[in-house]
Length: 241
Image 1: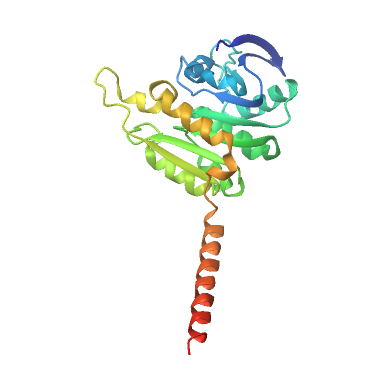
Image 2 (image 1 turned 90 degrees about the horizontal axis):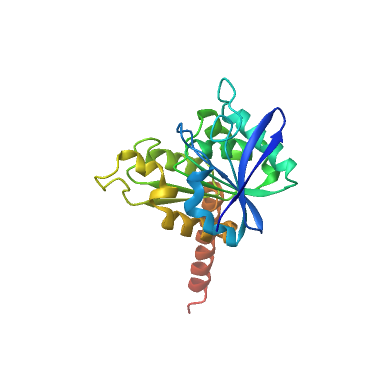
């Protein structure tokens, strides 16, 4: 499915974005490499058969406004909040790649009531975010390649542990093909598009059921199971002649 591009005035900035499809809103956020734009999401535009895809060029990228200094992830999140309000969207899911994942996290941390779920693809993060994420409690799918040399797979495990309601999916090595450099493992929406597409579709269709319980709840449930087993054992013993 093809996307339609348009430009909107958002606060003091001009923001270029592509949209496609109908249904529940899904905001797609690209990374921070110099030539990145909404076009990095073209391999997953098939999701427009189910979702209303909104893929902006972040400030400083593509056809959006280019301030003298590229706004940081906090300012980008604020711009996105202004954008979704302008579009009349009250609640949405976010899918971010690389630095776009970090922007998505900041959006969710600042406006949790506006967020249904998150998909993070080889996402970066800020140390301050990691501390705050323990209170997020939004269904989150985290996707990494095992050979990601930029953000590294360790970051995926740290995010999984910080976000109790999350699921980590580790894809096999993406940079084995000698025709490409090691950075392909950080561009999974392009070089592992079918897998990313399938994982995102499955997760977003029922995100609450796809995540693990927060560790403290998981431990509590295990304790309840043990106590039930002990009760059954005691009952069985007392019933013997």
